[in-house]
Length: 94
Image (tube, rainbow, N blue to C red):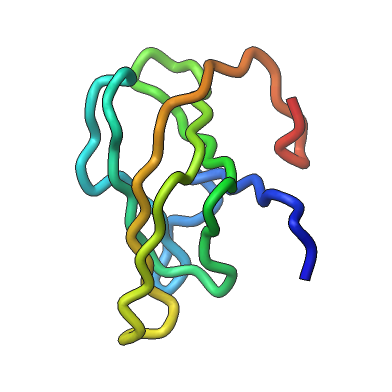
C-alpha cells in the first residue's frame, strides 16, 4: 500500500453504490462533512474535488474518516477547503 494521496472527483461518483456528496456543506472557512459509498474509500490526506455553486472547482482535504462497516463501502469524512483550481485535466491533476 502506498502513501500517495488519491484525488476523488465528486462528479464521477453519483450512482448507486458509487456516490460521494456533501452531508453538511458549510462556508469554505469551516469544516464540512461528506459521505458516500465507494469501493476505494477516502483516506486521511486524500483530495476531493467538487464543482462549487459559482462554477469553480474547489479542492478539499480529507482530515477525518469514519467507516461504519455496514454497509462495507460506506464512509463519513470531515474535509477542509484547500483552494480553488483553475484548470483540471482528465487525471484530476492541477
